[in-house]
Length: 115
Length: 114
Image 1 (cartoon, helix red, strand yellow):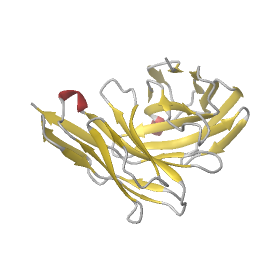
Image 2 (spheres, helix red, strand yellow):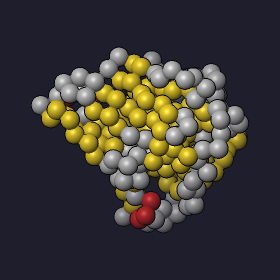
Image 3 (tube, chains in turn green, brown):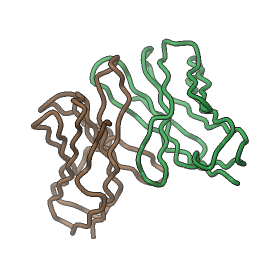
Image 4 (cartoon, rainbow over the protein chains, first blue to last red):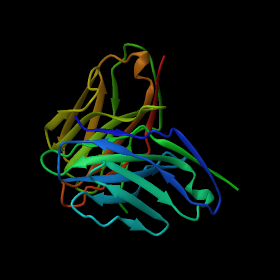
């Protein structure tokens, strides 16, 4: 069974600093997607960034980037120049590409931004 | 603008009641999902559906059932609500793999069973 593990229940960072959130996953599949979702206090889950496993280049979206290590099954999220609006729960997620898509989430990391 | 709508944000039900949570999406997505979210456990998949009338059990299907009679609507049913089903329920939808796969979520329903 596929599993996703986020070992940091809570993280905090000073505004304008950089923070990295960790995620590891377990799968026997070779082709899959990985995602980071953000859930602010409004509860609306929003996609932050996605990575396709067959692409070696790490995905980047403005201040958000990932470090994808396929062999190590690691997928960390780096947030640069942290802003107060980045405060939220962050979830790492995994989905296989073949067959019925099943989206599996980690436990979440609560990120606090200190002004 | 894409939209996934859950029928209630807050719901209070009594133990033993039959509870229906409704979810509607307007994006013509094939996949729809029901998750429950509990502190420290993240989002756990209850059921998902990849086509009309098709459903698959997720990781925690016990005590739940689902219905998908139309492509845009996916209902979660608690046959006989129990206090351990008090939780946040999130509905999501997505296109088939290789056509996008980004999941779009509803606002969530916070269900309390008393």
